[in-house]
Image (cartoon, rainbow, N blue to C red; front, side, top):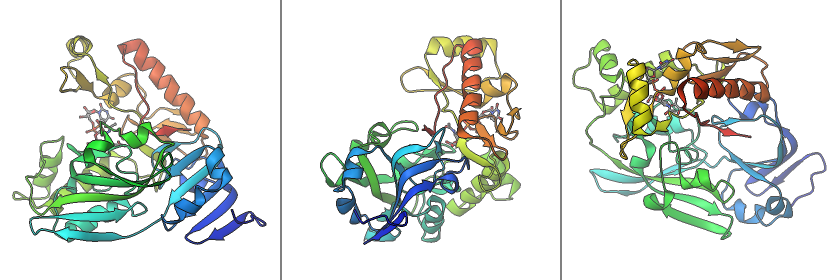
Amino acid sequence: MPALNSGLAQGDGYTIVERASLAGRNTFRVPARAELLIDVRKPAALAELFGYAALKTQPLLVLGEGSNVLFTRDWPGVVLSIAARGIAVPEDRGDAARVRVEAGENWNDFVRWSLAHGFAGLENLVLIPGTVGAAPIQNIGAYGIEVRQFIAAVEAWDRREARLVRLDNADCAFGYRDSRFKRERERYVVTAVEFELPRERALRLDYAGVREELAALGIDEPTPSNVAEAVARLRTRKLPDPAVIGNAGSFFKNPIVAAGLAERLRREHPQLQAWPTEDGGAKLSAAWLIESLGFKGAREGDAGVSERHALVLVNHGSASGAELWALAERIRGRVRECYDVVLEAEPLIV
Ligand code: EPU
């Protein structure tokens, strides 16, 4: 590894900073440091980097735009950020195409690119923060669509095999806000994603508010771009903007519970929204559970729950990650006590 005389080193396709601040690298904007922060512009550099002792022995964290992580402490090892850019169309069959996107591209920019190039499918996923490389890790989803529906394959550096591998959709083991990459975080570093994008596709308009928003825009025969516009308006109204107030989107997953518990809760609380799951259980609205306990807009110092959406924790200014986590724990405790439901955090908690 190049000598870090000034705490900074350059290699071919990467930059290393020692004891680096991560405050500007997480959308909660909480202070934290990494022993080593490595920005990788060329994935080919990974072979060299993973040959170094520091990357073999120290804990590794891969960070995109930091929009799905909460640092409650410093990272005692290496933080790797894949900054590779580029969108290519290796195969175009007219009605659909294969599109390869490097991991460091911004997700929303890519959605806009896909719409501008006449592709359909990603319109409901507009304005989700983060990078393309992060999208498969938690299988991002919104307004009735999940990204796994359009992923043909994911390319990743496999630390166990010490080479680039290509996992097709089935190998990625996608689930609700879940994937193999999330379960085997230490093993894979996503370097690129291959999408299979159709040029025409039935639009998904049935999810909460999309049709109403299109009607408000005066559109009755929507195009994919119209749907993106409607979703963008919904999101802007409902979710706090991380550029304005620190947050990482939904802080908890919507809990999946057994049919019996769901039925009992729905009987006692008819307003509680629940969606049936394939195995006969139900996915409950975590936002409703949290709001019903009076947490919406709650604040402990600078750690708070958004007043716009009960599922989003926010940093009003100088909250630490530990303070935000303490608030999250208090919410989890109350939800468990009152509803017998265990909430799981959605972002990675360090
Ligand atoms: N609700 C409340 N209080 C609130 C907000 C919502 O009671 O403050 C209830 C309402 O009944 C509403 C229902 O919760 O109808 C569902 O709310 P919403 O449509 O906002 O969706 P969500 O289930 O809370 C999920 C995703 C979001 C995604 C939206 C829209 C998860 C964990 N979150 O939220 O994803 O944008 O659906 O599809 O699945 C994210 O993952 O970071 C994220 C923002």
